[in-house]
Image (tube, rainbow, N blue to C red):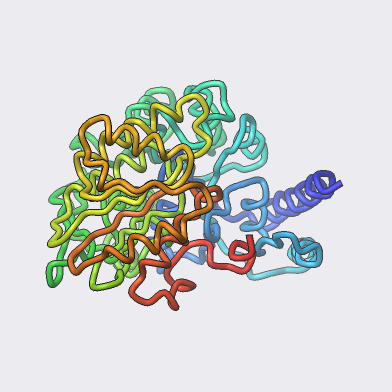
Length: 434
């Protein structure tokens, strides 16, 4: 019965969303990929918000529920039937009455299973499509027969692009870059750190204050010759640079002045739980990357931890990576080998993450410096780490979302746990009651 009602609600709000698009005709920027969709969507919005009347997907609204809700300007009703009824009536009001509707929408388009994006592509015709990265072992891959099937699914959005539209590609990713040839009849721009891209980041560096990491600085270089310095605060890692480059590429395609774009980007702190710098207990530093996890994202997070200058210990708190199917065991093993060469202390949370600890021990990591916790023990893991924190320590926390909830561990380690609601992901009532 619950499934039937769910499908009815999806059908209604999707019809309303399609009708709203036909009525108001907003221009659409659609973002997809297996890594960095939310950060890229937020960066694009930040770069364009001072130039256009624009709306973005809230949080990570990228599903069959999320996109229609963004188009309708509604919040999720979660398990509240009255909230969903209210959303339906708000959609009808948009259709029946004239409304001051945004001229641009930035939509995050995700997929959990085959056919998700292809279904959306039948009614969504974007003016700009951004494809971030398509790694060898993408998130949600267990629902697909192969990583190649994930690529085909994501590519459906590019096929839906308007003929006069622009395709923005994460050019450092080989699986994305090959699309440049396949869609050569479209206007294409690429971004990345490699010099062959149209928008390139150079002189990337981590900034510090009083010995603690504060953010990133780099230059955005465009083929036309301009070079603009950019500073981003409270975020770390090269993976934070890519969304900014994507935003510059979109701004460039739409004729937005680069200085206007950079002003909006420097004021943006990025989404919670994505390599955010937080103040930890006992004057330590927490790198909060607890929104989700996948092999490529974990690899990048650990690489960032390696680059950081630390006066104290480097502690990696790593949870299960979910939805990897047959790739799971090997992905966790590789993570353990990488972590062993970077961290001074390794803490794992979850059944699958035990493979991280096992691989670390196998390559010589001191077993005394490894602590393992089961699924559901994130609070306990956080309390254990808090007890060992000393001034100058740096903690990286990263794991998949619904099963591991490592934000619970981070809360235990915060300098001011009472501020968790404003600092961490999944602090709304519905998540906290799970």
